[in-house]
Length: 220
Length: 220
Image 1 (cartoon, chains in turn brown, red):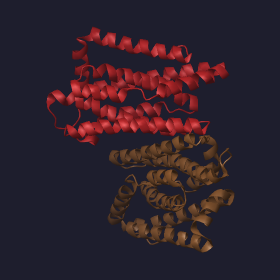
Image 2 (image 1 turned 135 degrees about the vertical axis):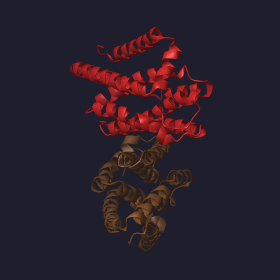
Image 3 (image 1 turned 90 degrees about the horizontal axis):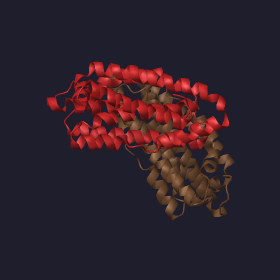
Image 4 (image 1 turned 120 degrees about the horizontal axis):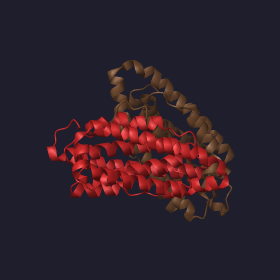
Protein backbone atom coordinates (compact mmCIF):
# COMPACT_ATOMS: atom_id res chain seq x y z
CA UNK A 1 0.00 0.00 0.00
CA UNK A 2 1.44 3.35 -1.03
CA UNK A 3 2.27 5.47 1.97
CA UNK A 4 -0.05 8.34 1.01
CA UNK A 5 -3.34 9.79 2.28
CA UNK A 6 -6.08 8.84 -0.17
CA UNK A 7 -9.63 7.53 -0.05
CA UNK A 8 -9.37 3.76 0.61
CA UNK A 9 -11.18 2.95 -2.70
CA UNK A 10 -8.50 4.86 -4.56
CA UNK A 11 -5.56 3.04 -3.05
CA UNK A 12 -5.37 0.45 -5.83
CA UNK A 13 -5.58 3.22 -8.44
CA UNK A 14 -2.72 5.09 -6.78
CA UNK A 15 -0.70 1.87 -6.54
CA UNK A 16 -1.19 1.11 -10.23
CA UNK A 17 -0.38 4.68 -11.30
CA UNK A 18 2.65 4.63 -8.98
CA UNK A 19 4.08 1.37 -10.27
CA UNK A 20 3.48 2.46 -13.86
CA UNK A 21 5.11 5.87 -13.30
CA UNK A 22 8.23 4.19 -11.95
CA UNK A 23 8.09 1.50 -14.65
CA UNK A 24 8.16 4.20 -17.33
CA UNK A 25 11.14 5.89 -15.63
CA UNK A 26 13.11 2.62 -15.55
CA UNK A 27 12.04 1.84 -19.13
CA UNK A 28 13.51 5.20 -20.11
CA UNK A 29 16.76 4.36 -18.33
CA UNK A 30 17.07 0.96 -19.90
CA UNK A 31 16.21 2.10 -23.45
CA UNK A 32 18.66 4.99 -23.12
CA UNK A 33 21.35 2.58 -21.95
CA UNK A 34 20.61 0.03 -24.69
CA UNK A 35 20.60 2.79 -27.33
CA UNK A 36 24.36 2.96 -26.81
CA UNK A 37 24.65 -0.69 -27.91
CA UNK A 38 23.17 0.20 -31.33
CA UNK A 39 25.39 -0.73 -34.28
CA UNK A 40 24.17 2.31 -36.29
CA UNK A 41 23.26 5.95 -35.65
CA UNK A 42 19.77 5.18 -37.01
CA UNK A 43 19.22 2.42 -34.45
CA UNK A 44 20.61 4.59 -31.67
CA UNK A 45 18.24 7.45 -32.56
CA UNK A 46 15.31 4.97 -32.79
CA UNK A 47 15.88 3.70 -29.24
CA UNK A 48 16.42 7.24 -27.95
CA UNK A 49 13.03 8.22 -29.44
CA UNK A 50 11.41 5.25 -27.68
CA UNK A 51 13.01 6.30 -24.40
CA UNK A 52 11.64 9.82 -24.86
CA UNK A 53 8.13 8.35 -25.44
CA UNK A 54 8.35 6.57 -22.06
CA UNK A 55 9.08 9.87 -20.34
CA UNK A 56 6.03 11.45 -21.99
CA UNK A 57 3.97 8.59 -20.48
CA UNK A 58 5.68 9.06 -17.12
CA UNK A 59 4.64 12.74 -17.19
CA UNK A 60 0.99 11.88 -17.97
CA UNK A 61 0.92 9.53 -14.97
CA UNK A 62 2.60 11.92 -12.56
CA UNK A 63 0.23 14.71 -13.67
CA UNK A 64 -2.71 12.47 -12.73
CA UNK A 65 -1.13 11.60 -9.36
CA UNK A 66 -0.69 15.33 -8.67
CA UNK A 67 -4.36 15.84 -9.60
CA UNK A 68 -5.32 13.18 -7.06
CA UNK A 69 -3.30 15.05 -4.45
CA UNK A 70 -0.77 12.23 -4.20
CA UNK A 71 2.95 12.75 -3.66
CA UNK A 72 4.55 11.25 -6.77
CA UNK A 73 7.77 10.10 -5.15
CA UNK A 74 5.83 8.44 -2.29
CA UNK A 75 3.63 6.64 -4.86
CA UNK A 76 6.63 5.33 -6.83
CA UNK A 77 8.93 4.45 -3.94
CA UNK A 78 7.26 1.14 -2.90
CA UNK A 79 8.01 -0.28 -6.37
CA UNK A 80 11.62 0.83 -6.75
CA UNK A 81 13.20 -2.30 -5.26
CA UNK A 82 11.26 -4.84 -7.36
CA UNK A 83 11.58 -2.98 -10.66
CA UNK A 84 15.27 -2.22 -10.11
CA UNK A 85 15.84 -5.87 -9.25
CA UNK A 86 14.16 -6.90 -12.51
CA UNK A 87 16.33 -4.59 -14.59
CA UNK A 88 19.53 -5.39 -12.69
CA UNK A 89 18.83 -9.09 -13.19
CA UNK A 90 18.21 -8.67 -16.92
CA UNK A 91 20.79 -6.17 -18.11
CA UNK A 92 21.21 -6.58 -21.87
CA UNK A 93 24.79 -7.12 -22.95
CA UNK A 94 24.14 -6.93 -26.69
CA UNK A 95 21.96 -4.87 -29.02
CA UNK A 96 19.81 -7.95 -29.81
CA UNK A 97 19.29 -8.80 -26.13
CA UNK A 98 18.13 -5.23 -25.58
CA UNK A 99 15.63 -5.49 -28.42
CA UNK A 100 14.30 -8.88 -27.24
CA UNK A 101 13.86 -7.34 -23.80
CA UNK A 102 12.01 -4.36 -25.32
CA UNK A 103 9.71 -6.71 -27.25
CA UNK A 104 9.20 -9.67 -24.90
CA UNK A 105 9.64 -7.98 -21.53
CA UNK A 106 7.64 -4.83 -22.32
CA UNK A 107 5.00 -7.00 -24.03
CA UNK A 108 4.50 -9.06 -20.88
CA UNK A 109 4.38 -6.02 -18.63
CA UNK A 110 1.98 -4.17 -20.92
CA UNK A 111 -0.39 -7.15 -21.11
CA UNK A 112 -0.37 -7.44 -17.35
CA UNK A 113 -1.02 -3.73 -16.67
CA UNK A 114 -3.72 -3.69 -19.35
CA UNK A 115 -5.55 -6.60 -17.67
CA UNK A 116 -5.47 -4.73 -14.37
CA UNK A 117 -6.58 -1.43 -15.97
CA UNK A 118 -9.89 -3.07 -16.97
CA UNK A 119 -10.89 -3.03 -13.29
CA UNK A 120 -10.15 0.68 -12.81
CA UNK A 121 -12.78 3.42 -12.78
CA UNK A 122 -13.26 5.42 -15.99
CA UNK A 123 -10.75 8.29 -16.13
CA UNK A 124 -7.81 6.24 -14.87
CA UNK A 125 -8.67 3.27 -17.01
CA UNK A 126 -8.48 5.42 -20.15
CA UNK A 127 -5.24 7.05 -18.98
CA UNK A 128 -3.53 3.70 -18.34
CA UNK A 129 -4.70 2.34 -21.70
CA UNK A 130 -3.34 5.45 -23.37
CA UNK A 131 0.13 5.24 -21.82
CA UNK A 132 0.27 1.52 -22.58
CA UNK A 133 -0.54 2.05 -26.28
CA UNK A 134 2.43 0.88 -28.33
CA UNK A 135 4.67 3.71 -29.52
CA UNK A 136 6.13 1.66 -32.35
CA UNK A 137 8.66 -0.10 -30.07
CA UNK A 138 7.31 -3.53 -30.86
CA UNK A 139 7.46 -3.24 -34.65
CA UNK A 140 10.98 -1.84 -34.63
CA UNK A 141 12.32 -4.50 -32.26
CA UNK A 142 10.52 -7.30 -34.11
CA UNK A 143 11.90 -6.21 -37.49
CA UNK A 144 15.47 -5.87 -36.22
CA UNK A 145 15.52 -9.21 -34.34
CA UNK A 146 13.96 -11.13 -37.26
CA UNK A 147 16.52 -9.65 -39.65
CA UNK A 148 19.36 -10.61 -37.30
CA UNK A 149 18.07 -14.19 -36.98
CA UNK A 150 17.68 -14.46 -40.76
CA UNK A 151 21.27 -13.26 -41.21
CA UNK A 152 22.67 -15.59 -38.53
CA UNK A 153 20.31 -18.38 -37.34
CA UNK A 154 22.91 -19.41 -34.76
CA UNK A 155 21.77 -16.55 -32.47
CA UNK A 156 18.35 -18.24 -31.98
CA UNK A 157 19.34 -20.51 -29.08
CA UNK A 158 21.02 -17.77 -27.08
CA UNK A 159 18.12 -15.35 -27.56
CA UNK A 160 15.54 -18.03 -26.61
CA UNK A 161 17.41 -18.64 -23.35
CA UNK A 162 17.55 -14.91 -22.77
CA UNK A 163 13.77 -14.59 -23.29
CA UNK A 164 13.22 -17.40 -20.77
CA UNK A 165 15.36 -15.57 -18.25
CA UNK A 166 13.29 -12.40 -18.80
CA UNK A 167 10.06 -14.31 -18.13
CA UNK A 168 11.44 -15.96 -15.00
CA UNK A 169 12.70 -12.69 -13.58
CA UNK A 170 9.41 -10.93 -14.44
CA UNK A 171 7.41 -13.63 -12.60
CA UNK A 172 9.65 -13.44 -9.53
CA UNK A 173 9.39 -9.67 -9.29
CA UNK A 174 5.66 -9.42 -10.02
CA UNK A 175 4.96 -11.98 -7.28
CA UNK A 176 7.06 -9.91 -4.90
CA UNK A 177 5.07 -6.78 -5.82
CA UNK A 178 1.72 -8.56 -5.32
CA UNK A 179 2.77 -10.00 -1.98
CA UNK A 180 3.47 -6.50 -0.67
CA UNK A 181 0.58 -4.59 -2.20
CA UNK A 182 -2.71 -5.97 -0.93
CA UNK A 183 -4.92 -3.37 -2.59
CA UNK A 184 -3.53 -4.18 -6.02
CA UNK A 185 -3.86 -7.94 -5.38
CA UNK A 186 -7.43 -7.46 -4.09
CA UNK A 187 -8.31 -5.43 -7.17
CA UNK A 188 -7.19 -8.26 -9.45
CA UNK A 189 -8.88 -11.03 -7.46
CA UNK A 190 -12.17 -9.19 -7.01
CA UNK A 191 -12.02 -7.93 -10.60
CA UNK A 192 -11.51 -11.38 -12.13
CA UNK A 193 -14.14 -12.82 -9.75
CA UNK A 194 -12.07 -15.53 -8.05
CA UNK A 195 -8.89 -17.56 -8.37
CA UNK A 196 -10.24 -19.24 -11.54
CA UNK A 197 -10.52 -15.75 -12.98
CA UNK A 198 -6.91 -15.05 -12.00
CA UNK A 199 -5.90 -18.32 -13.71
CA UNK A 200 -7.68 -17.27 -16.90
CA UNK A 201 -5.92 -13.88 -16.79
CA UNK A 202 -2.52 -15.59 -16.48
CA UNK A 203 -3.43 -17.90 -19.39
CA UNK A 204 -4.24 -14.94 -21.62
CA UNK A 205 -0.91 -13.34 -20.76
CA UNK A 206 0.96 -16.60 -21.40
CA UNK A 207 -0.74 -17.09 -24.78
CA UNK A 208 0.11 -13.55 -25.89
CA UNK A 209 3.73 -14.17 -24.84
CA UNK A 210 3.88 -17.34 -26.98
CA UNK A 211 2.52 -15.43 -29.97
CA UNK A 212 5.32 -12.87 -29.55
CA UNK A 213 8.02 -15.56 -29.27
CA UNK A 214 6.60 -17.12 -32.44
CA UNK A 215 6.68 -13.80 -34.24
CA UNK A 216 10.36 -13.43 -33.30
CA UNK A 217 11.05 -16.95 -34.58
CA UNK A 218 12.10 -18.12 -31.10
CA UNK A 219 10.93 -21.34 -29.38
CA UNK A 220 9.01 -20.49 -26.19
CA UNK B 1 31.98 19.37 -45.73
CA UNK B 2 29.13 16.90 -45.29
CA UNK B 3 29.33 14.09 -47.82
CA UNK B 4 25.88 14.75 -49.35
CA UNK B 5 24.54 16.12 -52.63
CA UNK B 6 23.16 19.60 -51.95
CA UNK B 7 23.27 23.02 -53.57
CA UNK B 8 26.67 24.55 -52.63
CA UNK B 9 24.96 27.50 -50.87
CA UNK B 10 23.15 25.05 -48.62
CA UNK B 11 26.24 23.17 -47.52
CA UNK B 12 26.80 25.30 -44.42
CA UNK B 13 23.12 24.93 -43.52
CA UNK B 14 23.36 21.15 -43.81
CA UNK B 15 26.55 21.14 -41.76
CA UNK B 16 24.97 23.18 -38.98
CA UNK B 17 21.80 21.07 -38.94
CA UNK B 18 23.95 17.92 -39.00
CA UNK B 19 26.18 18.94 -36.11
CA UNK B 20 23.16 20.07 -34.09
CA UNK B 21 21.25 16.83 -34.79
CA UNK B 22 24.18 14.79 -33.49
CA UNK B 23 24.74 17.21 -30.60
CA UNK B 24 21.13 16.66 -29.48
CA UNK B 25 21.56 12.89 -29.68
CA UNK B 26 24.73 13.01 -27.54
CA UNK B 27 23.05 15.46 -25.14
CA UNK B 28 20.25 12.93 -24.73
CA UNK B 29 22.80 10.19 -23.98
CA UNK B 30 24.66 12.24 -21.46
CA UNK B 31 21.58 13.54 -19.64
CA UNK B 32 20.16 10.00 -19.51
CA UNK B 33 23.45 8.76 -18.08
CA UNK B 34 23.70 11.59 -15.56
CA UNK B 35 20.06 11.07 -14.49
CA UNK B 36 21.26 7.86 -12.87
CA UNK B 37 23.58 9.90 -10.61
CA UNK B 38 20.58 11.76 -9.16
CA UNK B 39 20.27 11.51 -5.37
CA UNK B 40 16.45 11.60 -5.56
CA UNK B 41 13.68 10.20 -7.81
CA UNK B 42 12.58 13.79 -8.47
CA UNK B 43 16.02 14.78 -9.74
CA UNK B 44 16.26 11.61 -11.83
CA UNK B 45 12.87 12.31 -13.46
CA UNK B 46 13.86 15.95 -14.06
CA UNK B 47 17.01 14.96 -15.98
CA UNK B 48 15.10 12.26 -17.88
CA UNK B 49 12.57 14.91 -18.99
CA UNK B 50 15.43 17.11 -20.19
CA UNK B 51 16.88 14.19 -22.14
CA UNK B 52 13.49 13.61 -23.77
CA UNK B 53 13.35 17.29 -24.77
CA UNK B 54 16.69 16.91 -26.59
CA UNK B 55 15.28 14.04 -28.63
CA UNK B 56 12.29 16.17 -29.63
CA UNK B 57 14.79 18.76 -30.94
CA UNK B 58 16.76 16.03 -32.68
CA UNK B 59 13.58 14.96 -34.47
CA UNK B 60 12.81 18.54 -35.63
CA UNK B 61 16.31 18.79 -37.11
CA UNK B 62 16.25 15.40 -38.83
CA UNK B 63 12.78 16.19 -40.27
CA UNK B 64 14.26 19.35 -41.86
CA UNK B 65 17.26 17.42 -43.22
CA UNK B 66 14.85 14.90 -44.79
CA UNK B 67 12.91 17.81 -46.29
CA UNK B 68 16.15 19.09 -47.84
CA UNK B 69 16.69 15.62 -49.33
CA UNK B 70 19.73 15.03 -47.14
CA UNK B 71 20.66 11.66 -45.64
CA UNK B 72 20.53 12.26 -41.89
CA UNK B 73 23.22 9.77 -40.93
CA UNK B 74 25.57 11.17 -43.58
CA UNK B 75 24.96 14.69 -42.27
CA UNK B 76 25.70 13.71 -38.65
CA UNK B 77 28.64 11.38 -39.25
CA UNK B 78 31.35 14.04 -39.83
CA UNK B 79 30.73 15.38 -36.31
CA UNK B 80 30.63 12.10 -34.39
CA UNK B 81 34.35 11.96 -33.56
CA UNK B 82 34.64 15.51 -32.18
CA UNK B 83 31.43 15.43 -30.14
CA UNK B 84 32.13 11.96 -28.76
CA UNK B 85 35.64 13.10 -27.84
CA UNK B 86 34.16 16.06 -25.95
CA UNK B 87 31.79 13.88 -23.97
CA UNK B 88 34.34 11.13 -23.35
CA UNK B 89 36.78 13.77 -22.10
CA UNK B 90 34.21 15.32 -19.75
CA UNK B 91 32.28 12.42 -18.30
CA UNK B 92 30.60 13.59 -15.08
CA UNK B 93 31.41 11.40 -12.09
CA UNK B 94 29.01 13.10 -9.68
CA UNK B 95 25.49 14.54 -9.84
CA UNK B 96 26.87 18.09 -9.39
CA UNK B 97 29.45 17.69 -12.16
CA UNK B 98 26.63 16.56 -14.46
CA UNK B 99 24.58 19.65 -13.59
CA UNK B 100 27.52 22.02 -14.06
CA UNK B 101 28.12 20.38 -17.44
CA UNK B 102 24.43 20.81 -18.35
CA UNK B 103 24.57 24.50 -17.37
CA UNK B 104 28.05 25.63 -18.40
CA UNK B 105 28.70 23.24 -21.30
CA UNK B 106 25.28 23.47 -22.91
CA UNK B 107 25.27 27.21 -22.31
CA UNK B 108 28.53 27.62 -24.26
CA UNK B 109 27.37 25.36 -27.08
CA UNK B 110 23.99 27.08 -27.32
CA UNK B 111 25.58 30.54 -27.48
CA UNK B 112 27.91 29.39 -30.21
CA UNK B 113 25.20 27.76 -32.35
CA UNK B 114 22.94 30.78 -31.85
CA UNK B 115 25.66 33.11 -33.13
CA UNK B 116 26.06 30.97 -36.23
CA UNK B 117 22.29 30.67 -36.77
CA UNK B 118 22.09 34.45 -37.30
CA UNK B 119 23.85 33.95 -40.64
CA UNK B 120 21.41 31.30 -41.87
CA UNK B 121 18.56 31.94 -44.34
CA UNK B 122 15.07 32.39 -42.85
CA UNK B 123 13.42 28.98 -42.34
CA UNK B 124 16.53 27.30 -40.95
CA UNK B 125 17.44 30.24 -38.78
CA UNK B 126 14.04 30.04 -37.03
CA UNK B 127 14.32 26.27 -36.67
CA UNK B 128 17.75 26.44 -35.06
CA UNK B 129 16.62 29.21 -32.72
CA UNK B 130 13.61 27.10 -31.75
CA UNK B 131 15.60 23.97 -30.91
CA UNK B 132 18.13 26.06 -28.98
CA UNK B 133 15.43 27.68 -26.82
CA UNK B 134 16.00 26.65 -23.23
CA UNK B 135 13.71 23.86 -22.05
CA UNK B 136 14.15 24.70 -18.38
CA UNK B 137 17.51 22.88 -18.11
CA UNK B 138 19.40 25.95 -17.08
CA UNK B 139 17.09 26.98 -14.24
CA UNK B 140 16.97 23.52 -12.75
CA UNK B 141 20.74 23.02 -12.89
CA UNK B 142 21.42 26.50 -11.54
CA UNK B 143 19.06 26.03 -8.59
CA UNK B 144 20.48 22.63 -7.66
CA UNK B 145 24.13 23.67 -7.90
CA UNK B 146 23.59 26.88 -5.93
CA UNK B 147 21.79 24.93 -3.21
CA UNK B 148 24.64 22.40 -3.07
CA UNK B 149 27.27 25.15 -2.80
CA UNK B 150 25.26 26.88 -0.06
CA UNK B 151 25.06 23.59 1.86
CA UNK B 152 28.75 22.78 1.43
CA UNK B 153 30.95 25.67 0.18
CA UNK B 154 33.91 23.26 0.03
CA UNK B 155 32.66 21.91 -3.32
CA UNK B 156 33.31 25.29 -5.00
CA UNK B 157 36.97 24.70 -5.84
CA UNK B 158 36.42 21.29 -7.39
CA UNK B 159 33.45 22.49 -9.47
CA UNK B 160 35.38 25.55 -10.68
CA UNK B 161 38.19 23.28 -11.89
CA UNK B 162 35.62 21.05 -13.56
CA UNK B 163 34.06 24.04 -15.38
CA UNK B 164 37.51 25.07 -16.61
CA UNK B 165 38.07 21.57 -17.96
CA UNK B 166 34.72 21.75 -19.78
CA UNK B 167 35.71 25.03 -21.45
CA UNK B 168 39.13 23.72 -22.46
CA UNK B 169 37.70 20.56 -23.97
CA UNK B 170 34.94 22.53 -25.76
CA UNK B 171 37.53 24.86 -27.33
CA UNK B 172 39.72 21.95 -28.47
CA UNK B 173 36.83 20.13 -30.08
CA UNK B 174 35.20 23.16 -31.70
CA UNK B 175 38.53 24.11 -33.27
CA UNK B 176 38.81 20.55 -34.62
CA UNK B 177 35.31 20.82 -36.12
CA UNK B 178 36.07 24.19 -37.75
CA UNK B 179 39.35 22.97 -39.20
CA UNK B 180 37.54 20.16 -41.01
CA UNK B 181 34.39 21.98 -42.09
CA UNK B 182 35.27 24.83 -44.43
CA UNK B 183 31.69 25.79 -45.27
CA UNK B 184 30.81 26.30 -41.64
CA UNK B 185 34.03 28.25 -41.02
CA UNK B 186 33.38 30.38 -44.16
CA UNK B 187 29.84 31.07 -42.99
CA UNK B 188 31.12 32.43 -39.70
CA UNK B 189 33.94 34.49 -41.19
CA UNK B 190 31.82 35.98 -43.99
CA UNK B 191 28.88 36.44 -41.60
CA UNK B 192 30.90 38.32 -39.00
CA UNK B 193 32.64 40.30 -41.77
CA UNK B 194 36.26 39.48 -40.98
CA UNK B 195 38.54 38.16 -38.27
CA UNK B 196 37.73 41.19 -36.08
CA UNK B 197 34.11 40.10 -36.31
CA UNK B 198 35.09 36.58 -35.27
CA UNK B 199 36.97 38.04 -32.32
CA UNK B 200 33.88 40.01 -31.25
CA UNK B 201 31.77 36.85 -31.51
CA UNK B 202 34.19 34.97 -29.25
CA UNK B 203 34.14 37.88 -26.80
CA UNK B 204 30.34 37.76 -26.57
CA UNK B 205 30.47 34.00 -25.91
CA UNK B 206 33.17 34.45 -23.26
CA UNK B 207 31.23 37.20 -21.49
CA UNK B 208 28.06 35.09 -21.38
CA UNK B 209 30.11 32.22 -19.94
CA UNK B 210 31.45 34.47 -17.17
CA UNK B 211 27.91 35.58 -16.32
CA UNK B 212 26.90 31.91 -15.96
CA UNK B 213 29.89 31.10 -13.74
CA UNK B 214 28.97 34.10 -11.61
CA UNK B 215 25.36 32.93 -11.33
CA UNK B 216 26.61 29.54 -10.12
CA UNK B 217 28.84 31.25 -7.58
CA UNK B 218 31.99 29.86 -9.18
CA UNK B 219 35.15 31.86 -10.04
CA UNK B 220 35.74 31.80 -13.83
